[in-house]
Image (tube, helix red, strand yellow):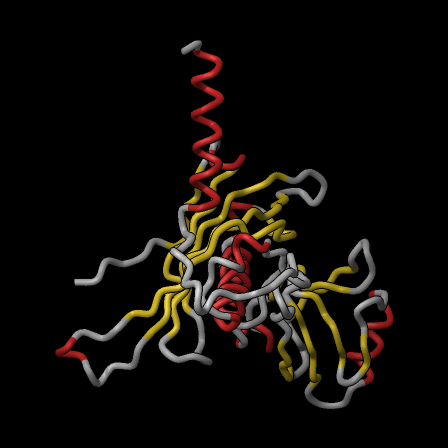
Length: 255
């Protein structure tokens, strides 16, 4: 076989594996029947009440609105682990500020006596989860779980942005699988936990002007259905795996 065809076959198989490595075998009786190419609901919004000084360094977005550029140490926001750089300000008290300019947002914050209720979001909008990914999951709730794991992985990456730059956007979720972890016989008192493995393409920028794509792989676990999600592994491969790989979180082996 000529060398150029061999190289083409190798690249094609590599891309197929990166897309399908985490996909479980579907169950025909419980497969999600969906014609949508996006996940069914957007998650990632939350509300906090911060005392002044807030400890947030805000900047205006090119598309309108204001986002968190930095969480200042020692301020009120630093006590809330939920707030990370890249979060978008959605409301100040009950006023929608998704399209407001910087001065309007600051006037609303200054005018509020006492603690300031803020609603923020991760700025990702509705994640693009193609039908071939959604249809491989066992239930609609699994799709919501995958959505939440991707968002939590983004938050973890943003907290470690010194290595990667700013995570600007999730392009598409290309692989996902959910496993139910049954407790061992000697651990019957423990609750059943869930684990989701996801792979998605994300856009990063180190200077706010140029950008690059990363193939991100993450694993998230939760001990209860509505419990918090812990990201136990997270890696980012620059240039779709052909460049440098950053292992941001390494999963600890179970002993």
